[in-house]
Image (cartoon, rainbow, N blue to C red; front, side):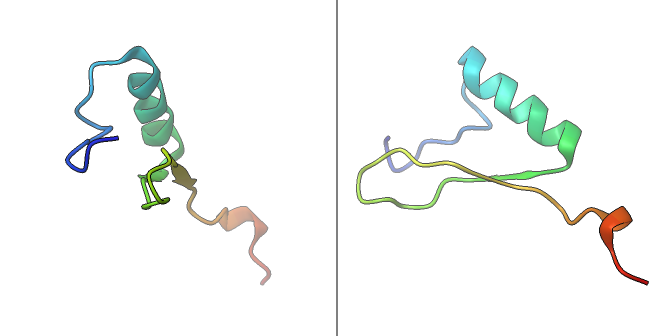
Length: 53
């Protein structure tokens, strides 16, 4: 992937679907450097219903 690649600005159907999923889940898509390998991480917010009271 090019260093300036922005998955939120691409027009590919796959990334558009991933970005829509992230919005629905209130998740964060990260693209950490993986030594030249394309790698993407989807970080979900904690589920408040699972918290111990």
